Length: 475
Ligand code: AMP
Ligand code: ZN
Image 1: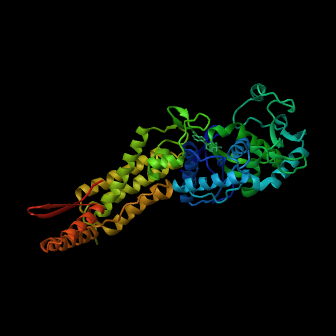
Image 2: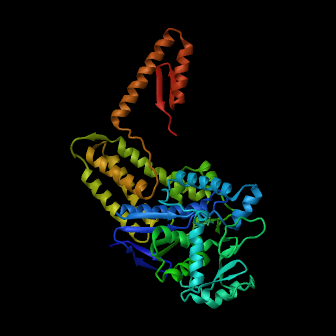
Image 3: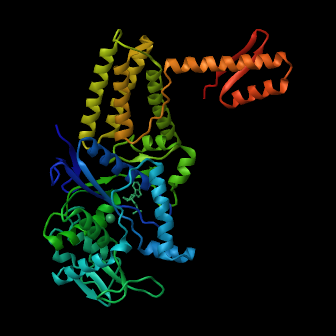
């Protein structure tokens, strides 16, 4: 069976069929670069990254665009607080964003367009919306008239009456309807602005995304993603703008991730319960953080707490330990043991991994399939000390592809084969013999230094009446 995804538009799982055969065009809403990203934002970016990697694994050519919002109220406020220009602020935090996503092994988007570098295209889109009768200008502001777009509310399921009621709380006499939203905002005192047919001002947030998505991916894109807070109003408004302009479906599949929570509440800047990716990486390795982030299905919440991270760490170690065991099996030229059974189990587990991912990217089930491989390796290693070389390589490569290639979790285990271990033993014995000779010659200083240097490398050295003993320290 092929890939099925849960489409927020229609709220059901559907078969995934891209617009152009063999190619998938994805737009994922990116960060507003006024501060470091937190681990909740990272969840949205890791989810998108795993989806992208899996589509690539399935053989699609993926074009992945994720924007950088470098103009909005928060950007303006923060730049004023920090005494920086908007551009300086944007550069500092977009550099930090790229560093953070790279630390989490998130693949760089193919294109990362910035709103401030697309002002002419945005102005043109607004101009056309006015021309087509979907938008209107009032005192240098431009608003989208939601009553003119028939499908308004179709993504979020919000009924127009409810929207009008809700929006009435914030009374803006310039709007024709309370639910209308700004496409262009007239410049206020002390704020940055760009020249436009409606005077100096700046674009609204929603028009940035739909304009840049269509510029780089065409009028109809395959997948549009983001956290579930973006369903309304952001994505609803993007649809209204884009479809009013083109008359075509803007995005075929809408995918939204659930919250990363702290004690059950959404992690967010405004609640103050956030932890930046940088700080989280001081406590946990990127592998453990990623493993934790995908341990829940993307449409279920995941709680950031010590216990969940401890579990992620233990589980990740179970995987690397089994790979270490696999790699330390001595290689031989032919199959003499349980190689066929091992390979069969591993290949079946790989199939289960793919089935789980094909079912709306079910990462917890996919991870369960990985643990079936772990079990098969451990059972084999319990019973055998040798393995035929090509089987060893195949099992190792399958694990690498699933863990690193698709889930993006590096499994850096040393290829410690038996030959290498022997070589290490002989070298340590040789060094200890030299040290013994030094002690015989009463060169205590040099002998002590050798012991210290070996200890620094992780060897435990004990001088006993029966001679010098050594072993490797286990972390
Ligand atoms: P922002 O910079 O606030 O626009 O957020 C960037 C992305 O992170 C958006 O897709 C948000 O929906 C997503 N996001 C923000 N907070 C969380 C959270 N606590 N859990 C999951 N996703 C989040
Ligand atoms: Zn967006």
